[in-house]
Image (cartoon, rainbow, N blue to C red; front, side):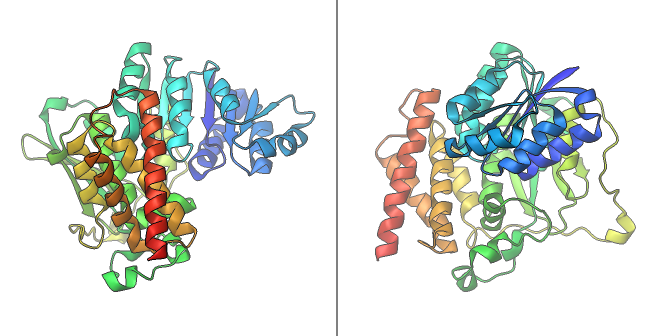
Length: 393
């Protein structure tokens, strides 16, 4: 049986992954090695019991005893903290879902690549912060990185069977989120609850807000470059309110190959789980006559500057991606805390990038995991200081 692990099992991607594994036979069809989660120890323990995992790990030390209690008598080991998470990632597995949110998912994903199996990558921060390191580690161990973001899964599928050299452009679609039609003055007053009200997708708090600001799409633009080696000028973004077309690839003959599907992450997860085969999945089938129309328009970068910032990050190269992600995460923390407004996030990220670029902190350093983590720390501190000044002004 295939040995599988799920890191970030209690988030939306992880829950869907665990459910698909359970529906595909669970412990009778898979040898489940490790599951990790956050503070929802009840859900983590339930998943671990149901899938008969070897170990369940919570990211928080103070959750260890509740997790142990919830797993008592199950035979599933319990552990907590970053060291335990890395130890779990070091356990051999053939297929690993990397779905921990944020830069925290980078080190476990890197560790999992050493098994030489398949890393199903839902943690886009890994490629944004350390794409060259991830690719080098995968090549060194003969591992495969399969994208799980719906857009990148769509690109991967559209390129399958094609010569990469024949692909001349890629188009990522974005729903536009709940604020796609809001004027700038209304955006400045947007609340956390309003930013979380995604019209098409059911996601966690942070990614929902990132989608509302288009920072999530900006991250995906950088990820597309790292995964598929497209130049910044070959990567386009279109607003597509229906979220039916997930991505398009344009070829040298002028043709476009589009991937269509319902807005349901189980498709991309299931594709990665079953690759290189396809298996039946419990997702809705499209009725194009009922949908009737598919709309597209260019994003408004004046109201949503994140895409412009992403292009600057790609042009800069080096550690700019690590700084961009850290600044974005820190600005989101400030918004969630009520320290800044929704429309302040992008300018705050830009201030951080400009300062670190001017100091020479992003392009001169050697690209290593340590330098990525150091840049992450520096960018967070810089953004927090800028947020405090903005709050006091």
